[in-house]
Image 1: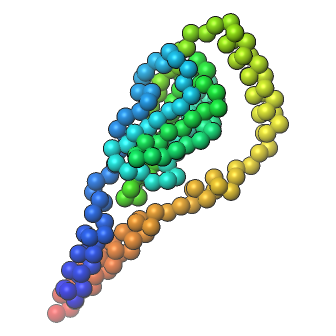
Image 2: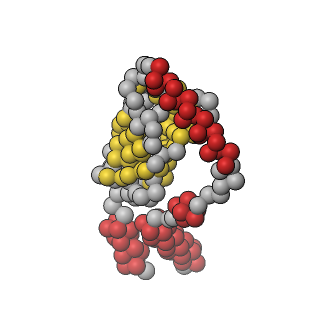
Image 3: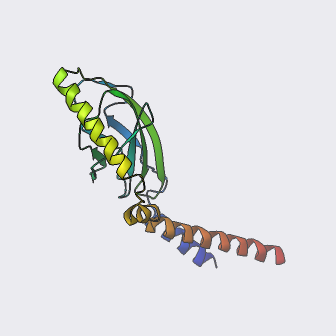
Length: 184
């Protein structure tokens, strides 16, 4: 029985070497608390280690309006989201949810302000863009979440499953050993 327990422990150590080394958010662009004075059309989150696909973030303006990214890419621990148009002047909060390489869920938020000097020409373009956006939202109020959104929520890391099974086996082995010692 000791051999089985030692084998399970060795397998756990070999197959889950990074379990104690969770990754974390290292830097952001823009930085937390920054005032951005140039048009901002992308946000980048840089992690200290690798993160898994399915990691995401959302951008919420001070008035509660959420700005959707047109694409989110993940390259070498950098999660980058781009927008169709630069973000308008406002205060923003970025709420991020990521999955570290070892399956550990990560989440947090940071804030920044966009304060780009506005010229009359840009102000006119923003007014027409806001009118078009209002028309789009009234037409799309009944839109349902896509199947891809539902699939992202149901993904479970294979490493999490293996780790859970190994922990269960170790716990059952320990309980069995303790019961055997009590009966002797």
